[in-house]
Amino acid sequence: MKNISNKTKGIICILISALCFSGMSSFINLSGDLPTPQKVFFRNLVAVILASFMLIKKGEPFRPAKGCMPYHLIRSTAGLLGLFGNFYATTHMAHTADAAMLNKLSPFFTLIFSAVFLKEKVKPKQAIAIAVAFGGALFVIKPSMQNVELLPSVAGFFGGLGAGAAYTCVRHMGNKGENGRFTVFFFSAFSVVITAPYLIFNYHPMTTRQLVYLILVGVCAAGGQFAITAAYTFAPSREISVYDYSNVIFTAIEGYLFLNHQVPDLWSIFGYFVICFMAVWMFIYNNKGHNSKLA
Image (cartoon, rainbow, N blue to C red; front, side):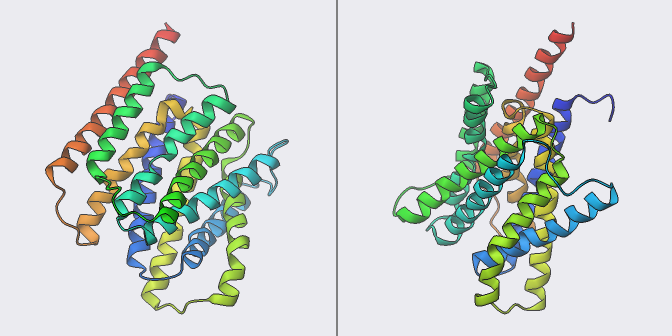
C-alpha cells in the first residue's frame, strides 16, 4: 500500500463504500415495514460499537482534532438530515427511482461545496466526466417526475444536499488531520443519541429475522462510513466522486440476486456502460495529470 498514491487509495475506498452502502439498502428493504427512525438507530448503533472498538484497539483518543469540533457537529447534523431525507423519500415517493435519483445528487453537492468552501478547483474535463456519469445514472434509474408528492421530493433533494455537505466536512477535517475512525464514531454516536428517544416511546416490535437484517444494515453502514471517510480524506471530491455511481451497479446486481427484481432493460445496461466508461476515463485522465506533475 505504500507505493499506491492517495488518489488511487481514495478510488478503492469509494468503491468499497459504494458496495457497502448498496448492501445496506438491500438489507433495509429486506427488514420490512419498520419506522424510519428505528432503522436509522440500528444503522448507526453497530457503527458506534465498531468505531469504539477500533479506537480502543489502536489506543486512539475519543476526542476531535484541534479545531474540528464545529465541523463534526455540522457533518453529523447534515449527514443525519440527509439520511432521514433519503429514507423518507424512498419510503413515501411514488417511484423509488426518483428517490435514488435525488440521492445521487450528493456527489454534485460535494463538488460544489468543495469548490466554494475548500477552494478546490474543478477542471473542465473532470466536470464533463461527472456530468456524463450523471447522465448514465439517469438511464439506469429512469426517473419519472409525474405525480410525485412535493414533500418527499423536497426531502430527497435535501437528503442529497445534506450528504454532499457532510462529505465536504469530512474532506476538510481530513485535511486538518482528523482521525477518520473518530469521525465515524462521532457521527454514529450523534445519530444514536438523536434517534434513541423515538425508540423509547415508539418502539416497533421486530421478528428475529428483522433484527438480524437491521444488524447487517449497521455492519454495512459502518463499513461504508469508514470507507467513504477514508476516501474523501485521501483525495479531493473532483477526482473520486464519479466512482460513487458504482453503487447503482452494485444495487442492481444485489436486487437481481436477493430482492427478486427483474432483469435490467437495455437502457439500464447502457447506463451501466456509460458509468463504467466514465469511471475508467476519469481514472486514466487523473493519472496522466498526476504523472505529468511528477515528470
